[in-house]
Image (cartoon, rainbow, N blue to C red):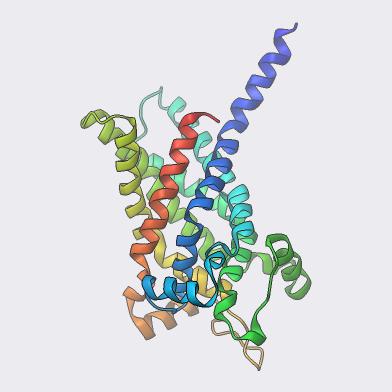
Length: 291
């Protein structure tokens, strides 16, 4: 009889382990790449190149400015990444079991990534909105700045000032971005691991580094346009007449195409790649360690 509770606890841990590992590794990764993410957002908001943004932030706001919105970034990982990576591992495990234990083809990994990304983004969208607003606050005129103290203060203010549904402002491009990023990063990562490890015979560390670089590139290329639109929508403020610069995601896309062409959506691509690759690498080191 004593074995029954033990078996139950093992079963529970096996179920929640992908979620715990995913959230913990995502939060660790955020602590490392938060400054890069801050620079990326400022570039997308038209503050100049990576060098200019970094110089101006150091001069005008100090070193601590690179970690503005860290609380929102950690909350985002605790919700979005926990759900995203946990769901992805559950889906892939079930798919492998249905496939008699054989490795999944790329299209099945991509489908698992798309589904997990959409679920994670829906859950993490409020924290993502708080993060973008906290990172973009210093770029606004003084009278328009929101001065959020932390992630929870931001969420409370958004609900009080704009209503509960405002927490999901920009959720459309957020979900599509997450689906594209997840498909690009998780599917290409696993595929790359199989190539580096099985075909080239690399060890664990070179395999993780190489696969992270490959997955970071594909994730960036597939998701950056949606990330750009998401940032514009989540950051926007009404003018003196109460009108927003964009009526929605599609309006943002059309106006961006008209003013800057297709390449405008890839503003900050090198920085975005640098942001994504370490994120993937740290997450994979943590999940493989079996927290």
